[in-house]
Image (cartoon, rainbow, N blue to C red; front, side, top):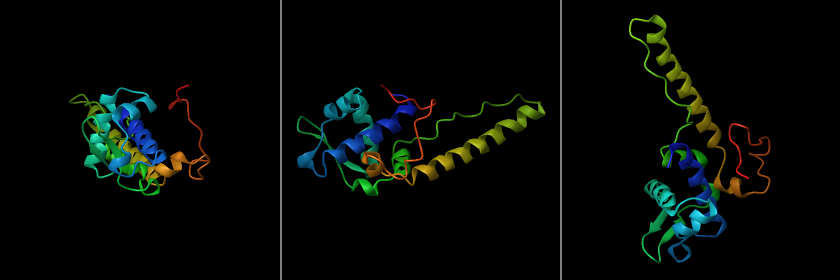
Length: 156
């Protein structure tokens, strides 16, 4: 799974668990069920849920009666926490090494790295204001001013 897909899959899985009221092992959602909702392969979901569990956002139980459930209420899970849990970033790339001996090549990679850090912080700040509950809301106020951009297309 690409790095760029971990965060959307994680947010979707958490929203699904909240929607289904999966707050304990008795209500655990199996990876196959979560995968059908995304839709993706259950292995992808298991990889993501392992990261979410390591971060303390969910718990999981392996096996035929296994699955995942939330450890926190959806209004208490912020998207910056989800992004950090899956080792995500703003996915803007990283600067290539500059050519040695070139004044621009030696200077620009460091400056681009600083700009990418600023963008990543801005993304984190924006995501810190959005919760899983907001994703589930029909018209969450925090998301009202936005529409999907061409750079982030919504699958049909």
